[in-house]
Image 1: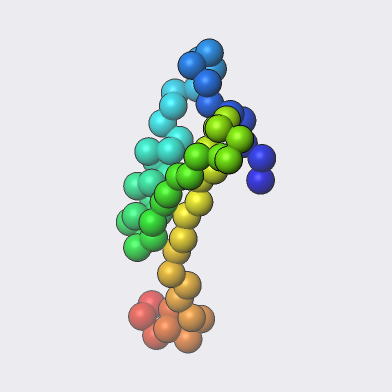
Image 2: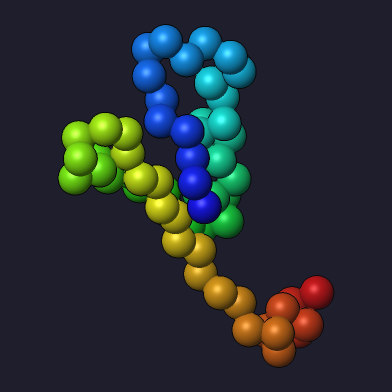
Length: 61
């Protein structure tokens, strides 16, 4: 996935996406992180979630 580099000149949008993403991921037991790109321009964001097996999902529903 390619994402636009955030710069001070970028003014479109509400700048709420990362906060909303973090809330959703953390409420599902995951985590979100950011790492500066080696080029020094921009950052790469990642997240992880715990997978639930189909059998476990069926028994808890």
